[in-house]
Amino acid sequence: MKNTIYILLSFVLINCSKPKNKTSIESRTVHAFYTDKAKPIMNCELIIKEGDSITTYNYRHSINEEKNLEFSFNKNSNRILMFGSERILSGNPVYINKNLQDYEFNTYRSRELRPDEGYLLFNPEYGFLSIQNVLAPSFVCLPTENNSLAKEILYDSRK
Image 1 (cartoon, rainbow, N blue to C red):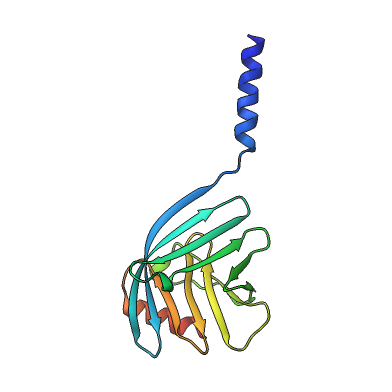
Image 2: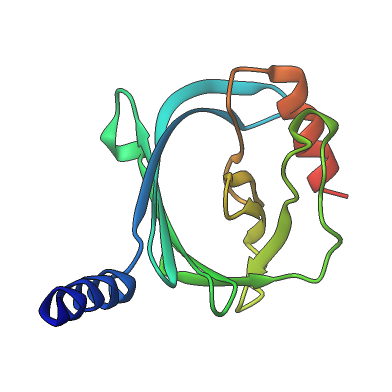
């Protein structure tokens, strides 16, 4: 009986000390804005791998691997590492959209305050909602294709 208790206790302690990793896969539609019109609209698969302190987000384009995007979020420092650049909270108010009411998006900016990099709207459970770029296209990422909502988010996030 004593040995059984030790075995059970050891099993519980070992399982409690293992990291809790979770992976989820979702569909996303990325609306690219070169002008006021979203073009092209890209379907991708979002793979979220959640670790103890780091969560990685991998957006896999369904046709062209060159359009894949991967970045990581550090839960402890609340920072994003994207394109080799660290992004930090900007201090802007939380963005909430009535069509995505389950999520509150924080605004992130480049740590270096580079003039060619815009803002990123991000929620750890959702991933990125929009990426604003000054010298390149801006992107809005939604669960389904919705041009009017994408345009609304693009303009709201520029305010």
